[in-house]
Amino acid sequence: MNIANHRLEGEGIEYRESPNQGGPYAPGALDTIIIHYTAGANAESAIRTLSDTERKVSAHLVVGRDGSVTQMLPFDTVGWHAGVSTWGDREGFNKYSIGIEIDNAGQLEEKDGQYISWFGQAYPPEEVVRGVHRNQTEPTCWHRFPQEQVRVVEELCRLLIDEYDIRHILGHEEIAPDRKIDPGPAFPLDDFRARLLAPPVALVDPVVPPVRRRDKPMRITAIKPFVIDAGVFVKVETDAGIYGLGEAGMKRRGRAIAETIHSMTPDLIGQDPFRIEHLWQVMFRGGFFPGGGVQTSAVSAVDIALWDIKAKALGVPVYELLGGLVRDRVVCYPHNGDPKDIDKLIESCRETRDAGYRFARWGMVDPEGDAQVLEPSRAVRFGIEQVRAVRETLGDEIEICVDVHTRLDPSAAIQFCKGVEQYRPFFIEDPIRSESSESLRLVRQHTSVPLAVGEQWAGKWAFRQVIEEELMDYARIDLCIAGGLTEARKIAGWCETHYIHLAPHNPLGPVSTAACAHLCFASPLVGVQECPRPPGTAHTDVFPVQVPFADGHLLPPEGPGLGVELDEEALVEGEPRAGAGIWFVREDGSYTNW
View 1: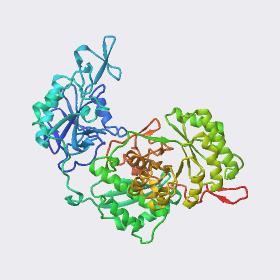
View 2 (view 1 turned 30 degrees about the vertical axis):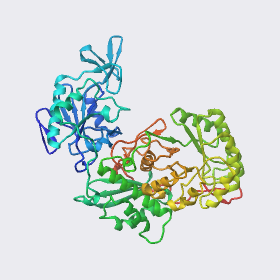
View 3 (view 1 turned 90 degrees about the vertical axis):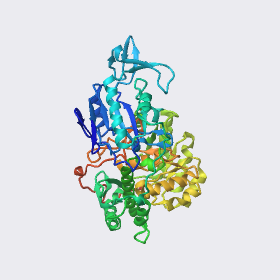
View 4 (view 1 turned 135 degrees about the vertical axis):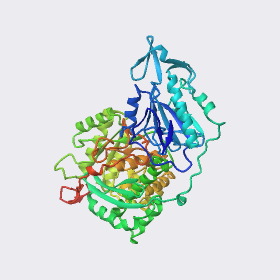
């Protein structure tokens, strides 16, 4: 075997490129080989998994039990095999390493004289090794690696060491010991290192040239807003072939947002997308006159796309650029209904609880009359009864959130909050209109119920008084209105100094969900994430790849960027919720907020 143009050449080598891949390694970064086993029935099943765009995992090589070799990524391309990983002073080993997957069933269970894999296949005694794992204390049973398979893996490692100046060979079990056990004691990992490598050196991050020294800085070549039924999105393209996705809030003003993006485009074409903060200032301040929510929604969409581009170019998830993971998953709340019927509301809350959600959430309604009528006194009484019924029926383990949706004035909001205090809601959302922080102070003075506000606010300045006076307990930052990830991370840091937790507003699409998830994964104070449509259940024609989700929680994507991909050919131009406005009226016909 030999290597040419970052691909293996030789008899019996098969090349089946995986779509799950990052960009090129940073200069000087590649210096490690990570050894994995497949923990599956055979090499072919592993190759299918590593090519599955929904699984979002990949490796460079798969070695069969007969010594056959399948290459799945060029050796100059970042793969997604290491996941959340740490060793020495490093973390996030995808960006430093080549991944080799070895066909092996892994740890086996001895049962009634048979040796059974986790997927139910039995193995004969001659294929079993008994050994003590480096991260365990008692001997257990493991699937044996055939001699020819081990020989081929050693030959591959020698080639890679010579070609790429590899300095470290590590097992997945060493870089992720709290969640991985491969390749296990059946594989001679320590012998490999002793034979193949020079005496070990300390693992430190390579010196990567700063952005200003890149030989050829990336340039923005196109900015494409899309107003479709799923929402308002933007695609930012570059001359490197890497694109980023963003999403804007305020869907009922979608055409205005798209035109605002068009108006900013001349200031962005030809610019380096790595200069995210600079470009944020250009977009926000370039028109001289401060803009409102439509402008910041446009800025938000482009800003999120720039973070997507930078993370893809560096081969890491966005949360790595925000400081790295501080949690393994993000708890979410659904949207429950029918809120006008308490029995149906309880059943909805029970269904989402059984699906894994720890939270229930619904909006304030008037139980009587026309669907467009909201009389505050009736809504307050009925809202208190709803909270009482859900708490008494489902018990103390369910967290309750009620969205007043700015439909009450301060006196009615105070009545409602005081009425539900005894039932311990997690928070009451937007108890009054968002224009007056002084009025929110009045509500805060009269209730101990936690308050969640901020979804309508455009930029950090709108949050200033409420944060500094500690008038809220949960910050409902809408990343697609407030100014994108750039602005949201500043607001989040400010909130941290006042022990205010995040509860990002997210009634939107897959890009918004992903951006919120990355912010939450990298933020120390997070209460809950709004997620009415679990990723992978909506708009999958346009966004075939979305972030992972299970049991009421968002999970960290391991691939580079946001973890969302766009099928541009599936786009159908629409006008989401545009045209007529939406509101409630009181019984006398006067306007009140929807």
